[in-house]
Image: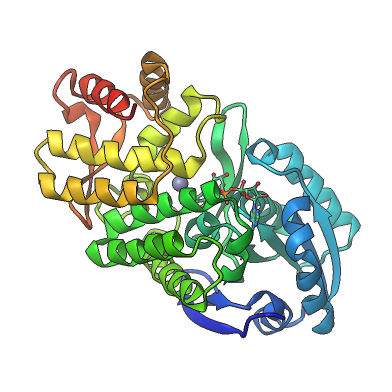
Length: 388
Ligand SMILES: NC(=O)c1ccc[n+]([C@@H]2O[C@H](COP(=O)([O-])OP(=O)(O)OC[C@H]3O[C@@H](n4cnc5c(N)ncnc54)[C@H](O)[C@@H]3O)[C@@H](O)[C@H]2O)c1
Ligand SMILES: [Zn+2]
């Protein structure tokens, strides 16, 4: 039996885009994809569902059934599972499929999966016939609160992560919290670390909402109770509202904007996270785990620069540690992390803009040119060692 449908809707209007899109968060929503696609896209006849074997094996049948019941013809295609498949080659394969299936301008692509599927399928949807409708069905917490909202699509390449991409806003997003029950606990934690990142830059309210999700998961890790699903549905809706509020003001991440409402603030915790991921060849840490470290380290740097009061860093530390399971990073080669940071610096024209905190909910973009000599090195060494 399916759980009863209960949903919270968040509308997102991006300046310059023709229509508002709706993000539905709740329980039992997977079976409503057919109706959603009908009302969001009007004339759609064919849909290509892009997924991977694992996710499609769990939820594909329900999605296909709902689409067919809405009178839409459906074909489903699998791509490889994991970050290493988020490539131009995969995007090219999806494009070939959209072409051979005869997906027209008025048709749609449905991305059923985590951020990897959403980014790669979204990228292909933005290129096919110069852009067809994209419906995001995010199935990880990270994809629900972050990657499915905001319109960034893309793939990795030998030049780096996410450097090839487009802005292509979805036509609708459906976040059904029931699917989190099958998610690997480490993946759920990774999503919670990204949620803490949002809370840290948004304010105490969103951080408290995130704490409720962390506690609910601790008490009911299998999402058996309706109250757990409700806590997550409400929490995800709050996160989506926050992300949408930032994206609306700076949809294409304006290059020179370093204001504290610029889209760049969403990169809080990501400078160190990307360096840790690169230094370990993307194999040791989940992205969200790297962000968990990045959040604490950015807060630590903020404290050392006398921007952030000690009680705020204690609060953040506490929330991160309540999620649990953050792998230690003391064995990662310190010089490799520093060198990843300095590569980043070279590719950004000689300085890194760190997102730091003046308080919870008070992000500030600070160039490392203003850091005292040796601060980064000594703080980083101390941080990595502190995680043993
Ligand atoms: N576009 C953006 O704005 C944006 C923002 C943040 C992250 N991202 C991207 O998102 C990607 C990470 O996404 P992710 O963390 O969702 O990882 P992912 O897509 O690799 O999914 C993680 C794993 O969980 C499995 N899975 C997904 N849903 C499941 C479910 N309900 N039950 C069981 N297993 C399930 C997947 O098959 C995969 O093995 C990265 O590539 C990152 O760059 C993009
Ligand atoms: Zn991230």
